[in-house]
Amino acid sequence: MNPTNCAAAVLYRLTMCSLGVVLWVISTLDARSLMAQFATHDYGSFLCAATGILGLIGMVDVLINDVLNEKFNWRPAYRHRHLILVGLAFCYIAQVYIGSTSFKSLGLNLFASWNAVSLLSLAFIDAAQRSKEMISHARNLRPA
Image 1 (cartoon, one colour):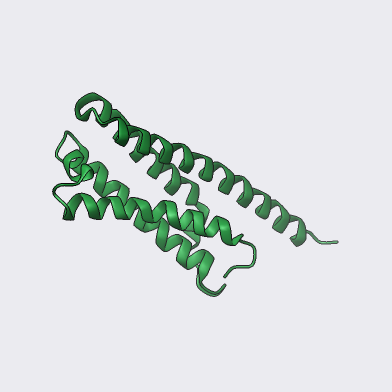
Image 2: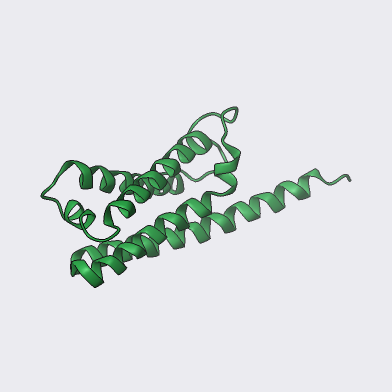
């Protein structure tokens, strides 16, 4: 594991990203599930797929950049990790919009709202932490 990353933060990012993938899989494999019913409304299937794809990209980013050795890296995903997390949050907020206009599911709306707020908080904290790391790295590179 990359020594600059907190294990709890890595696990939380992996959990939040994998949740999007799990919801996508459930929406496609279990026709009786709430997510499968959601996917039949308006842009529900697109949002489920987008959530799953962004979650998969986020999981690969965490596994490559945080879990594997330093010699393995995917720098574009690391630099833009906050955008992946904000994209996931947008998918959940869009689920709230569709859920409140056509699907009318309070449980889905609360679940999606909680995930969106969690992902936005995670994106903000992650971006602030990486900004501190870049500043610290830049200070170490200055000639004495």
